[in-house]
Image 1 (cartoon, rainbow, N blue to C red):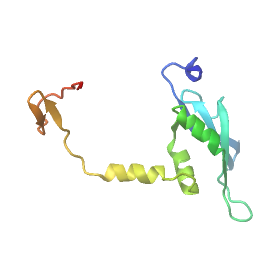
Image 2 (cartoon, rainbow, N blue to C red; image 1 turned 90 degrees about the vertical axis):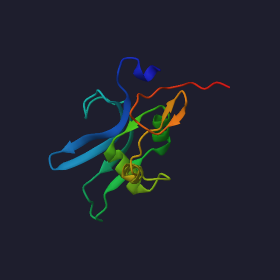
Image 3 (cartoon, rainbow, N blue to C red; image 1 turned 180 degrees about the vertical axis):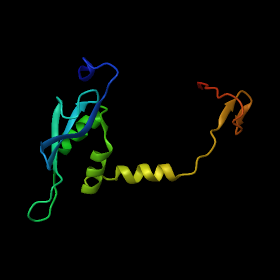
Image 4 (cartoon, helix red, strand yellow; image 1 turned 30 degrees about the vertical axis):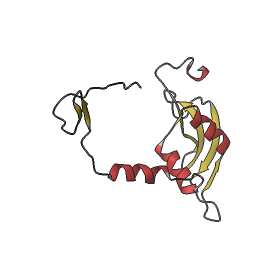
Length: 134
């Protein structure tokens, strides 16, 4: 696609780009190539995040959800801080961090290996991949 025209072996990620000055951080939520610098050139700004509380003790976050959905549909990856912001906002049907922690807590079962004789649950042999055709 045109997104990867000049970036071979890279991908687009939705991440935070630091702005502001000393002791007063401000972040832009951007879609950028993963090989670019943190505060470097980006493809599109998707929102902003101000982590410093204002006079009402609020931390301000803004998103452009239509564009975030577009970039995710294009195959963009999200970084953990952005996933955390989206999950806290409650804008998605599910919270990414809660689901990833839940998946990590499931017990690990040994893989089922398929042999020519049938299905085997032992993992002593090498795994073989078969394509089943009807």
